[in-house]
Image 1 (cartoon, rainbow, N blue to C red):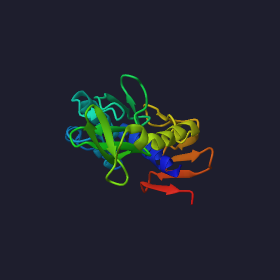
Image 2: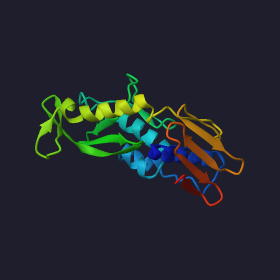
Image 3: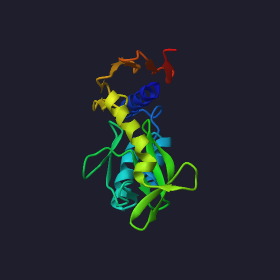
Length: 209
């Protein structure tokens, strides 16, 4: 859960920094460069706007495939909640296949990374097993991961987070957020009591232990 707190704190810092025209706490990259590769690349930069743009451009180009059907999928990424959804059905997207290299990308604590390899066998999309030699269908390869992701959503470990337009408030039923006039931000997990704090003076993130 603390990983999520760090992610949410980073989000609040980034939004605040952008609205305050700060050049010291926000890191931006050339989104045009990122959209020519894959959305997972933006994870390393923390540029979620570029990630959303990458999902849009690559979806429109037909580069991303639905991991269940092997058909093109249009993915929409929300920079506020950091969730990807199927633009057509509205269902959450936890992984996709990039048909340019047949890599499988998946979400892990808001970070998109390569998680496997796929290939087409006739009209079926198949996935390389953990042993490196077997090829499995979607259910056999990813069912356990899907159940884990759904469990995380149901338990609130992957919650809907809203950041106000001015960057001063973060709303979430599982979190308590405080901001100060000097830019300090504190986030507390109401269930576990875990805390993280951003000190605006030295621009450092501190934990409660």
